[in-house]
Length: 598
Image (cartoon, rainbow, N blue to C red; front, side, top):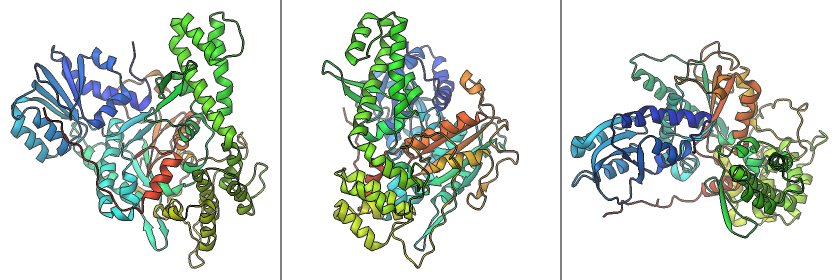
């Protein structure tokens, strides 16, 4: 039987849902229907399976917005976001003719008095329970969360959406507060100092930090315990996407980042063809233990590991050793039902690794050396790159795709902290994007210098940690800037001038040994070693898979501090470039959804 994910944030969220929604259900013997909106469907899917819900007495899961047959003998659980759209759909189920015996209503977050009174007016006699769970974020992975809002990027950075920015920051702040509340943390809040570019100040991190701190104070003042909660041994750092423009556009060679960049994976689903030509699909998440084990490894290590793991299974069942092929695995599956799931996972990763390596050998390998030299500022021997144009030219002269050339041009510009208008125009002509120059120019909206001017002082680059002694692959020398920040924060080395305090965390906090009064639930085995502090990082404008990997790496190396990273959404290089280009386009009318009438 499938079990609930045992991983970090996902487990904490499922525990919270069980302690509220499920416990209320258990007070009644009647089996129930669970009705979800789009967000809560994603939320539940991220932390449990249908078998888990069945075990807890929930037999049917329905869509709030779809037409449903009345089931008058059953009670319905409504788990939804506190929006007018959701409340109206709920009222529609009871206003004229009730569809269910009673309603148990659970909101992800604070429900306004206006909406609450509206519900009470039309269907008060049917509502048995009405609670707020304070979970309006998605636990993507054990140490990664998102606010499920890719549109926040445009709302915050597009000159056409300035009226939406304040509302978007308010919403993100409320979602971050629910993350802190779910973890039972009241962290000290810091933010990356605002950027000034061409007389424009970019201070979204400062604004969001102030909103989060205000909402945290308000939340813990209103806490059910009627006791004001002091600051816990946690720190929250808020930073903007423009803080490190290099990491999200580099070609990465670690398994997860590489796969999501080069292979068409949608909603974490990888589609591939089996040996017999049939279409297969696999979900890439932490329930796949092999994926969790391999995702942060370099592709060279993954290519070595998978055949070894397959041979282990083969040896366990006394199969003759030989070259492992996908067709061979198919035969193995038929003979060993007990190992079918294990072998299926390895088949998936054999295919996915093969896909990644095909892309690498075809054109990515040629790009990586130039990209790494431009990003790091030196070649593999450590010799400084004196003329970045000489590094860039071979990429422009080779028949690479347009997106690949744009990525290389951007890395060239970032390496110089901006280039001249004349030089930029030549580069744009070379890449043949005269009509789409916004791919490059719109980075200015993120506070990244694109055109240098003698009248402005060059931006001061933050110094990087010395990693010359660390073992790296020659085509993977770049380290995400956020990893430096994580390590500096844990060691209490962040400069107050660059990282001002919105609110102080306890003086003793150094990320390496202070004990937190955090989770109320009993720690699972994998959490027992983390009895120290927490560092939460929020990146405005999207996080990359490389930055997600950094959170796990720092947690692993420090052990006494758990690093959690989040954003409005997760971005791949191509998605980010498309979002950047769209910033200067006028806002289009949003698609609307209507309830299907019976």
